[in-house]
Amino acid sequence: MHSADNSAPRTAFSQELRALEEKFAGRRVRLSEILEATRGRGFDLLLVFVSMPFVTPIPLPGLSTPFGFVAMLIGARLAVGRHPWLPRRLLERELPPDFVHKLLKTAARLVRLLEYVLRPRLAFMHQWGMFRRLAGGLIMISGFLMLLPLPVPYTNFFPAVTVLLFAAGSLERDGVFFLAGCLFFAVTVAFFVAVGMGGAHALDGLWRLFNGA
Image (cartoon, helix red, strand yellow):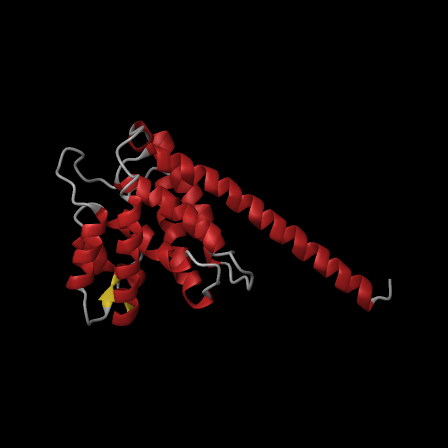
């Protein structure tokens, strides 16, 4: 998804995150600063950044709406074959220093583990427009699901992991992670269908209860 020169030396993702942690220590950080600091991998890093807080079973409604919107907007641009773009209001949004520090520290540890399995494989999946557009479409839908304020465990987790897999795969041109993202998206859809069916069943039960059926 990024536009960096494929022949240029590539810093390990975890090292880049640790460098950002030091760079932004003790101050509020704008999203635009994160993009500027990543030298060509900014939007992939941003997708990882906005998905990381939700790789937990507990919904975070205060963050899920703006972060889900960011993922949805980036995905929508990729889906139509255009360069990622965000409104200035979002780019200038400041994040608290403690939040940024904890998030980058946790992200660096997780990505360090991912780097044991991330490597350039099936690179055509990140080079062909058809696959990039597919990834963008699935990221867009996952971002939309992230921003829904549903008070149900794992409603943020499944779409966030989908976004994380696509973004991590793009960072290292790893087609295996692209396929994993597609698979996890299918799991995400199945989960939300099950939640929807369960909610419909509960509402039907309440209707019958209050109407004496």
